[in-house]
Each structure stands twice: as C-alpha cells, then as structure tokens.
Image 1: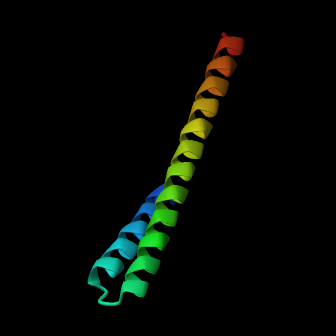
Image 2 (image 1 turned 180 degrees about the vertical axis):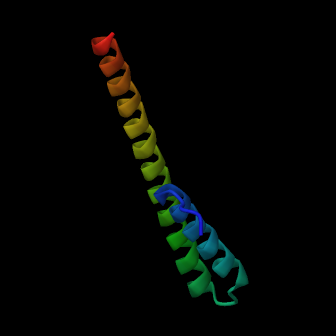
Image 3 (image 1 turned 135 degrees about the horizontal axis):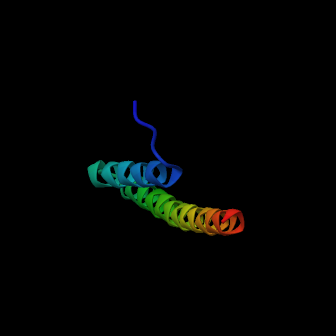
Amino acid sequence: MAATSTSEHYREQAERCEADAAASDLMEVRDRNLRSAAAWHAMASRQQKSEAARAEKDRIAEALRAQCLA
C-alpha cells in the first residue's frame, strides 16, 4: 500500500463524504455529510499550505547550509 500525505488523506475523506451525501435519501444525512466534506476540504487546504511552507523552509535551510559550506 502506497503512503499518502495527510492532505491527500483529508481529500479522500472529503470525497467519501460527498459520495455518501449523494447516495443519501435523507436530507439530514446528506447535509451532515456535506458539512463533513467541507470540514475535510478545509483541513486538507490548511495541511497543504503547511506542507508547502515546511518544504520552502527546508529548501531555504538547505541553500543556507550549502552556502556556508561553499
């Protein structure tokens, strides 16, 4: 099984909630699943921004290390 990032996992959960909402005949269940999907999407977006910021920080740190060693 391939490892997925946390943001990918959150998006998969959102898609699952959206599918459950689409399959539901009950308005309350559909609404609950759509709210859950929105929450999962928000978490995925925040996590993706965090992952990008961490990668940029690591890139800058590596560039500074290389510059110091040069």
